[in-house]
Amino acid sequence: MEINQFISTLHQSKQQAITWHHQTKGPGSFSEHKALNNYYDEIVELIDGLVESIQGIYPRIESYTLSNPVNWTEGGSTIYFKGLYDFVQTNRKTIPQQETWVQNQIDEVAELIADTLYQLSLK
Image (cartoon, rainbow, N blue to C red; front, side, top):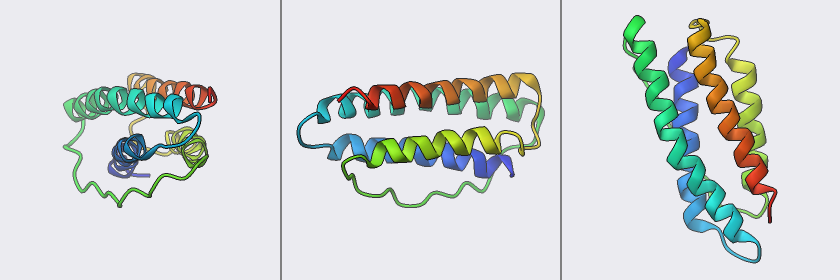
């Protein structure tokens, strides 16, 4: 996988979290609302650090692709973040940038996703 595709997915996750944050409703949704808020606040800094450090050694990352976020459904965010965690763990092995410092930054992304999944379970 090319790094631009990997980063695009992380950017997409930020936008998806913002969308769902604004759409949550119903009993137990406050914890989901807060978990999504925490995710999109923290992922911005992690993406920025990852991209900028990679671009210090490698060429600029270009050609990002983003799709439209989907609307909120009950339980959908947990399914999404489980899939995102699997995506990160699988595709981190296939990007060309395999230095430990890059992988350590990806560890922080995986940790944030895992923490978000925990927070989503607190309904």
